[in-house]
Image (cartoon, rainbow, N blue to C red; front, side, top):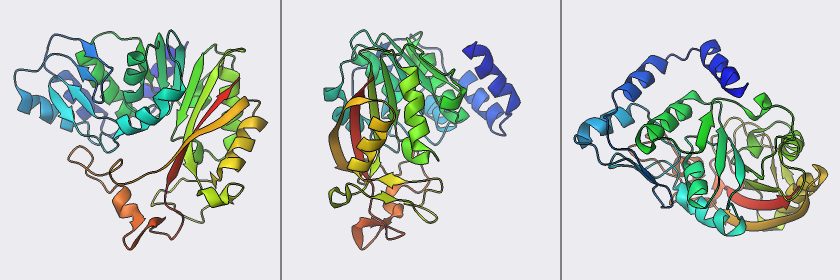
Length: 298
């Protein structure tokens, strides 16, 4: 089944950095495992005896995009303050006893927060192998947890209904060439009644609710941004995909306080993608990133 498919994905796509990443995982110190996931920086494992050496192992898995995390006593200050996004999402969704799918989950930071909020099972999928390796580093310290990251894209999942109570798609939709197809696929992965979509994605400013921006070239230095809708346009897509009770529960501009470079993510970040003279515009002169959270029912 899925494990086999994920294993094949690893074998079919040997990655130049894989041996280095595997060596970093193998060098992680043995510590007493444990998890306190319900914190801004989920705390996994007892502190390692040699913090400097552990830091070097974890640094070999650079860049860390989602966090913050505390692994074996070492705090990882990731590019994203993902705790800020979680604080905007969490009040709008009840995860108690729920089975959750997190699409484009990265290293599984949000999966930990979901467990902290009472989820029974979180399955994360992300095709980026480095993030799967970071998740395995987390697991080394947490021990067995019902939160998994599989090296798969959403297109590798069987067409539904897969029986998830809740599907999260955060920071994914604007990378999809066909956003409606992505939303329909999610609709198919949800349980047939009482299930929830949590969608977080880029939108246009309030005065452009019905518009659609199709960037000609890059958007905020990102190559693969296909389209950014206004919130009404986005709501229409979600309804067209078969959802009901579609609510835009939050709209927040993304600032360099939430997304920035750190020693754990040394490449350029949001600050380098905004117009230095006008923070309301990207370097290309387009509207700066605003992210909306949409909640809808199957």
